[in-house]
Image (cartoon, one colour):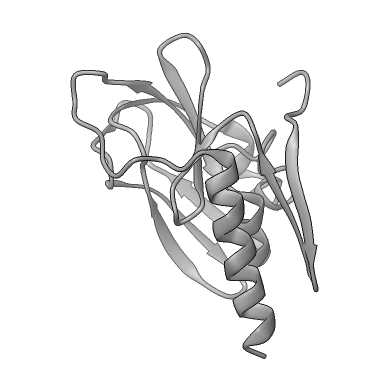
Length: 153
């Protein structure tokens, strides 16, 4: 990825929230960005990786896996949690980020760039799941969540 995305940013206590403006988001923090060739690149938001902790292991479903919106496509483990994340799009995984096998910390280091998870050939004929949030809507949601987490201490 050549030029980095433009960000919406805020600082709330320990969180520095960055939401890339060039993609859409699920409320859970999975992002989807169209690559312009019928594929979408999927990853996790900066806020999700910050709140989850350091990624120690990530397993993305293999290339060739068919996904419907809401199907789990990645399982990852951090020092805090083990979780599966749902695909925001329908289609077939065509590529898994090869760096994740040896360097899962890329998800923490560069969630909007080198830490992407998978590329999916989007199936436009399959109905979508819940609508994705645009960057300002996801940013507002993350600010509220960060404020709740900071206030809940």
